[in-house]
Amino acid sequence: MATVYIPDRDALPAALKALQPGDCILTDSFTCVAGSSRELARLVTRLAEMQADFKSSREGVDTTGAKGEFFIRVCRELAALDREEQKAHRREGIERAREDGKYKGRRPIAVDESLFDRVVERWQSGEITARQAMGELELKPNTFYRRIKEREGQKMKDYKKMEKTIRSELRESTRQSRKAMDELKKQVRTEAKEIKKAAGDRLDAHDVEKEIRREKLRAELEHSDDLRQMKKDVESEAAELKKLLTDSAAAE
Image (cartoon, rainbow, N blue to C red; front, top):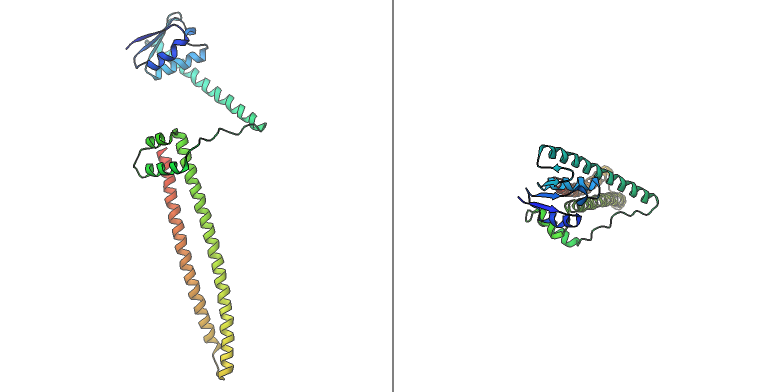
């Protein structure tokens, strides 16, 4: 444990970088390390998080004692209040900029999509950890997980679009099949009439209708099997995608 004397604010950054748990920052007055009460509150809160102490000779502040714990709590509350006020001011500024048509949001971070896909696949397969994946992509956790959600969300949209296309194609195929069956029915009837006329035979029209119905039923069953198989494939892919989204949310 060491006591680091800070004569003015210029010496503070270097001291904070070298500070170790249990060390103590000593200064002559609050004004030597902070320009305002909020700045002082943020400094004391940061020192408490680093498990370091703070002493000021003029004001008689010493965070190593019982009174020091109370002083730290007050500083934490002030620092939290300051953060909330800054967020509120930022939100108000964004709203005004939006109303004026000037706000365009933060510039998106450029990421190589092919590299991102490869790294995410390695992470999802368990080859690397999430922290290692973020390091390779040079992304912060919130950006990393947001990009994954966007990626999986786009996949879900693509699957839905594909499912819609398949359903549309199946409906069109069924319509065409029914049309073809109607044409076949007409053709069979015509041929039956011609056979009856040429042979002078009484061909039972009921048998022709039965044959037509059998052919129509056979064709519809074949298309129904295709539809069930395609639907099964789409549902299986959608289930895999939902599992990926659930795993991503759990990892976050």
